[in-house]
Amino acid sequence: MDLPFSQACENNKRPILQYLQSLLADSTSVLEIGGGTGQHAVFFAENLPHLHWQSSDIPEHVASLTLRIQHAALQNVPAPIALDVNDQPWSCDRFDAVFTANSFHIMSADSVATFFSELPNHLSHQAKLIVYGPFRYQGDYTTESNARFDQWLKDRDSNSGIRDFEWVNKLAQTAGLKLSADYGMPANNQLLVWQTDHPD
Ligand SMILES: C[S@@+](CC[C@H](N)C(=O)[O-])C[C@H]1O[C@@H](n2cnc3c(N)ncnc32)[C@H](O)[C@@H]1O
Image (cartoon, rainbow, N blue to C red):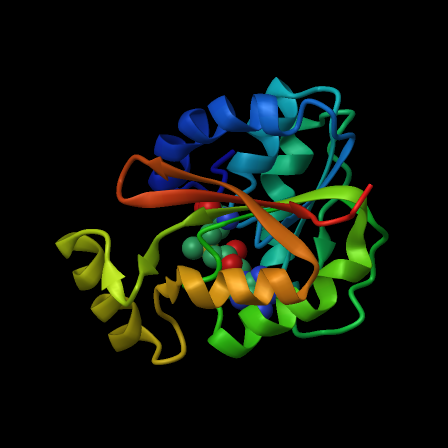
């Protein structure tokens, strides 16, 4: 059977896993936003069997996301759910971690802001937010190729675009999160990690 496939996902899943192994060592449940082809869900859940990995995507992409997840038939990956970050409240519970890859530059800036306003309702007491993708820092692209990628995104959809790290970090802080790591990743991407900012 031909399953949905992304070469980028295939390339980045091992470098991301290297970090998830320690980042999610003490977590039990993960909500994935914008699961896409399901390659991340299946690969991470296979390699991190202590996790219950709940993937999701916008309603029109759930059927294709379901194909790979159903095919893998992993005990720790339930059927994906339909979740558009703009449709509040999200119809799911709380999780120890929320993971999303390559979605903030696809969805609109308003959608990213909405994501952060709803997020606290779905995080457990000690939770992490892990975001993979390209970002700008102090208004600058990390590379010339990211600048070209941003222009390509905007030509395709004027609502898309590489987000400013500082803007995203401010949204995260307002949502009660504190940045705990910013890892440089292959192909001009970052892996950003925030955690719930409690006094205890
Ligand atoms: C470039 S794909 C990335 C897919 C996958 N995470 C990966 O890394 O290959 C962007 C994903 O964001 C999802 N997305 C776009 N807008 C969204 C929204 N408003 N709410 C939730 N997901 C959204 C798309 O449906 C798509 O699955």
